[in-house]
Image 1: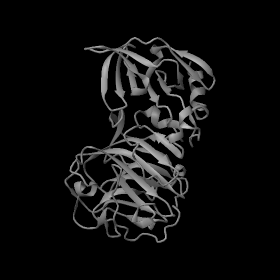
Image 2 (image 1 turned 90 degrees about the vertical axis):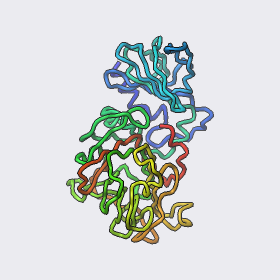
Image 3 (image 1 turned 180 degrees about the vertical axis):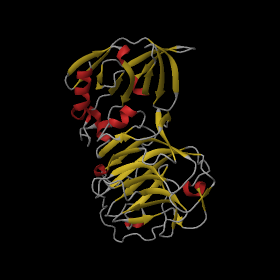
Image 4 (image 1 turned 90 degrees about the horizontal axis):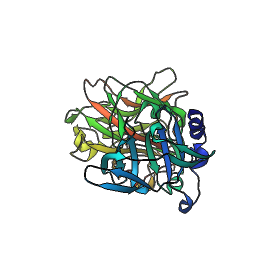
Length: 361
């Protein structure tokens, strides 16, 4: 079984589009399943079943697969917890026969006793994800090492806790670069890094300095660590709030430097709740941002957060990256306390500005 599963993971690109997803018309893309097995393997295919039978404490149901996001199966192979596409959750007992799948290497049948979790890939997902070069759910060490799309990463520190979707990875301020990926996955011409994060145990006031840096990069010798997306009362170029900085493009922030709070930087009082972050860049100028004259911007919860570009390169150039470096989650300048939970990291090879799909994995 493991041999077959590893083949499925290797040929997933052929079945569902690969690192840059296929351009096939969404109308012809079938609903798919991704099965994570108890031995750490993964099988991807198109299922025969259309519904999942489940007995809850109050009713027996036949739940359509297209309404399901994830199913986690208990150690007894019967108890299960479901997350639906609308965010609702259900717990109960499933009576599931072996799942029959059509995979890239033919038809297979996998018993529920071999399955730890499975996810539903909605019909049309393939066409919608053209340009996706990295997708990691950050929900387990296995997932971090085996990205759903793109190269695997490394778990250097942290723990897994409830995330925005399933599990997320939590890092404290002593666990800098707790999760890393090869830096050469980051596009230099134009791109977007998006993820969900939750800030915990931070003070109300936002000091000067990178406190904290959410995304950073370093060179192959672990030197020159620096944040490319961070909270800062003054980023050194007179920008403040939620700040960004990319070599070759320059810095940006929510507004001018000065006295800041985390709530003001995010534009919401719900600092400790889940928020969606997106860092976007392109030398051509981002459409809809400062009349297309700026090449760097940050979006929070689907809305433009950036309004200050002091020190920016005009016109912006391509992004420059240190050789052999790593892209890392969490870096900071001397914060004694605080935690950040990260979930669902994606990198695109174009300047994505429409985040209407952020509510889905």
